[in-house]
Length: 205
Image (cartoon, rainbow, N blue to C red; front, side, top):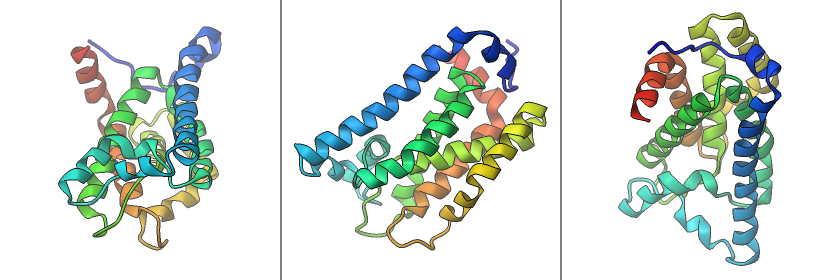
C-alpha cells in the first residue's frame, strides 16, 4: 500500500471537519494533564509523582508509562502546555496517524533513555520529553522529506523554538536533559523512517 508522507496542509484547509478529531484529541490530552495535576495537588498531595521514572530501578520502569502524564507543579505543566499544543498541532497537519505514531515512539524512547541514563536517586516526570520529540520530528522531517511544506514548518519551528535545543544538554540543574535528549532522538527516528513506520502501523490495524 502506498502511503503519502508529505504534510497535507491543503487537504486539511479544504475540509473543516478534518480539524475536529485532532483538536478533540490534542485538547483532551492537555486537559487530562491539567486535571491530573490539579487532583494530585488538591487531593493527593503529590502522591502521583511517585509514579515517575526512577532510573535503573525495577519499580521505576512503570514511570515510562506514567511520567509524561505527571508534573512537579502547575508551573512545570504550564511551561509544557503551549509548546505541546503548538508542536502537536503542527504534527497533526500530517495526519492523525502520524501524530499517534510520533507520540508513541517518542513516549517510549524518551522514557527508556531517562531510565537508563538518569542520575541515581532522581525522579523524572513531565511531558517535556514529548515536547522535545515533537520538536525533533518537525525540524528533521523538513530535512528528510524535502517538500516545501515540511521545510516551511521546520523553519517556523526553528524560529519559534530553536533555543530549546540547549535543553538536550546537562546544563540546567533539576531538569531531565535525558528525557529531552532521547525525546528528540525519538522524534528524529520517526522523521527518518516515517514511510516505513506508517506502513507497519497501518498493517497492524
